Image (tube, rainbow, N blue to C red; front, side, top):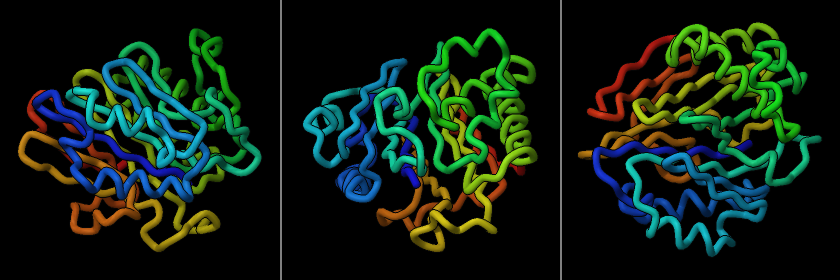
Length: 240
């Protein structure tokens, strides 16, 4: 389905400074993942329902926006889910920003895990936005890392899903989760479709979906979580 790209840096840079010309290869995947895009940084989100490769605003932002961390999401809408701005990722609340790749069935599975105080913030119809507010609810209860682990395992135990791949960024931490259902390949375009890869380049950490030439990066295996300390770029990998 969708494609995910995130970075955290010890300096304020543009996405293009961090990823280089490979950034254009990532954006080119919007010829398939064509149902909009979203770019989140510093609590701000730029979104469009048109393909990223056709966007003048993204072409401008990729070099002009300077930040120490950002998330970029290319959307291919799950079957039956409306293409509109409210359904575009990333989603943000307070200082937490989130994006998801995969499909959860039933689409409202995560609602049972959303605390009452977050239910009024739902704007769209996606399984992903419900996943996000359920995640925030678990983070309130367990803390960031264990809250993320908890909600992934709760949804994994209560839903049919293709993938629960997510990236979560706060001012202090970047988290990536690789969790996909190897028994459900209906949405796969390649054998590595839902794999996540990461690389540390000097003062930058980059995490991304596959499909654009990042085959030599380190692998985040299925059922694993990557946690990056944004102040040092030290990281750990643990099982879900």
